[in-house]
Amino acid sequence: MIQDNSHFKGDFSSLWRLDVMPPIRRLSWWWWWALILIPDPDRPGRSKQLMILWSTKETPAIRVSGHWWKPGGRMFVDEHGGHVIPGMVCAWWFDGEKMFEPLVMRECRMASISDTHPLWPGEGKGEGAGAVIPLIPQDMSIGMAPGNKSFWINLSSDEEAVTRGAPSKFEAELTPWWGPPSELTYKNNEYFLGMGYDILRLQATKCRLVVDGEVLEGTGYFQKVSVQAPSFPWFWGMLHFNDGSYLDWFMPHVTPMWSARDDKPWRLRDFFRTPNIGTGVFQDRKTGKTQNFDNCTVELCKQSSEDALLDDKGNVLPEFRVKVWNDDSSATIRVRAVSRARWIFDQPTRASWVSHLTYNEYPLEVVSITFEDSEGVRTEQDYEWIHGNAEHAWGVLH
Image (cartoon, rainbow, N blue to C red; front, side):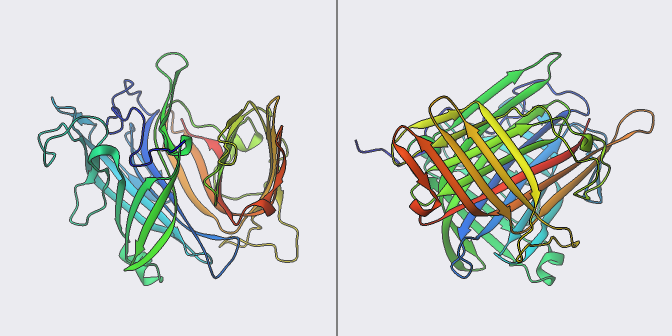
């Protein structure tokens, strides 16, 4: 069966709106987030990675990696559904060896519009085309082209990052890859008192990335997230395979690290996590099947081999040992971080209390992977390359 990969499929009607759920003071948090992975020919097993997010939060003030962001206003929505929001554009770039973090940390106001808005050039259909446009001199936009054929991303690095050797300009185009990973997935859940989440995801796309004029080919991941709840510790990770397969895992948990107040890893209090619950998915290009996993465990270990890697503060980088499974299949994964980016959030709450969240992102190198199902057993040896990223967050932001 020939697949139509000419455009992204799914209901994108809420892609450029942030008013799906009524906002909650100090809790509501919205972002568009993209991750680009480029196989590194000079370092087999590694990938160059670019992460970009466009974000806003319902808060009087929050400190982001040392920068105090005070919105000074709330989201404005006009009669055509267009949004103007106070927010930040943030990004990091990993060139396969060195992490440039932050690559961008820019406070600005942003407009978010769909193609049905009068400001959109041309006539739109309301099927997904639109853009987030930071209202600054540089083009730092993300948008979807008419017909949902592609996303574009434009980014200009901060001058300080360029002086440290970072590229100055990035231009990306994300296009469909195949079937389910390039079809929009949507999850919405409201717990109580308006708290909950709303998530749109494209799990795997093809990507053409131009870095200071150099054309690179790789893959992309995109999500738009609305969270209306305290941010608790979690593990999350994803892998792209050369044949188009996609795998991820997610394990929220309770841990003594909820009380951490900085970004220092490997604390003595980090000795247990409960419960061992979580989910995952494997979009298998070989069989065309989707395996939804309803069980997940993640073990966090220090790298102990002779070539163990360190972050920029001299801390040993982690290794993640992950297992996801259901009644019919399982995946056992061992990956190690090759670098570390982190965002440190401190938000004043009540009675002079300051809540904290350290959000770590780790470009990965696959040590081993075993996937078992009714078709047999596959390992990392069955793929030309596997690239991915893992998250680990601690603290509680509220």
